Length: 524
Image 1 (cartoon, rainbow, N blue to C red):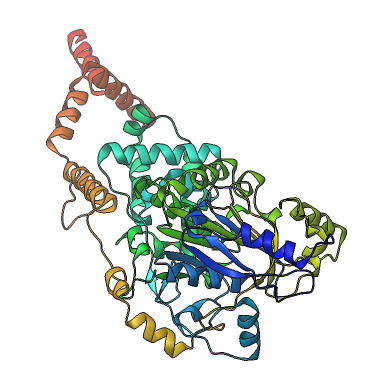
Image 2 (image 1 turned 180 degrees about the horizontal axis):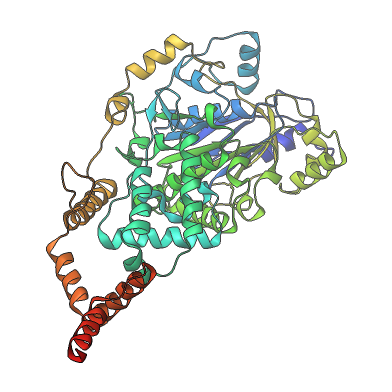
């Protein structure tokens, strides 16, 4: 840090972090080793739809910072959706308990700390307990579904044609059974029609798609395909006190299935973007989404999906939706997306290797130059619960880079017990709304009926004779058979075959024998 007086420090940061409109409290400024500056670091509420980044090494306090921001949003009447990858965010639903560390930190920050429980809705897209989030196959669309299925470009094209076929024929694709039945129908009954109207497809490619679907079902993906489809506006509810709902999506049991998780979240983002109205410049967001372990979204992502995510994150802020990416290093986030993140909270990084030092240097370059701090040195020197912060002011300008002591959460900094979790889920009105099975008529039922009718027609043309193993001829078959037997060609073939057989047996044909007898009689 450059040599500056404490008065200059206080004046600079009070000016940079004091706003006219509503704001949320993040912590207080640290000057060198002086924790008690009295300068509170606040973030304008209206800029939280400009997105954000929370980064730092394991154990530096990223999750607690996420918890603090979610609490502040709830207190301001803003709902949030939080990805709970590690299973340590359920404690937001219970009030925290004080201790000496919390009391000391609260005093340094100048805040009144009171243990507070927040309204929480536990959700799941897998086997975890909570509100089941489902989406139909049609809502996913062919591009996102192809990513889950790990299809190549040619197979993705075939899947797109299948979706178009279903749209044109009025065949709802709700679950995986619908998609499988459509594919079987095209292969067995509608192949010629499909090729004529939609194009040629290789049977081997269709087989690959079917095998990929079966593999996906073995991973439990069928649990989030179907109805009732989740209404995204249920994420934006407030409780009786006007506090925003904290929706915790538990995905602890599908961490290894990154394709399922990332693609589902991209589908959810796309639906939010499509259904939310344009709001323009709002005083506070309608919804803020936190992607914990954000690198899972970008891992092995295709250029198409990255472009889709980048476009969404650019435009979705006008719908009043903010997106926060939580990850270990800013390098986990593509540069084109990183540039869209207005609020940056950088916890400490560790430099164990040359690659780590390079990552730290790169991370420091993401922050504005400061007269008070050297970011590249500070990143490795911060303690747990401390972070480098820069945000956007109410006019969209970057604030001063500041070393911040993050305020302690008001809710429990631990998980709920099994009993507490069960009670929370049992009392949820959303569970009764979404945790039920709906099986209305869709592509599976419609096409299965068509296939059964086709088989019945075939059986009607070729009926079985009861009591015998032989098949009786239909009228159509008899008519054709008679025409064939009466034709001159058939008579000639039959006559020659008969002659050949009689010759082999040492006999002559009847006509030759008759002619010989008649000749002998005339000579006599």
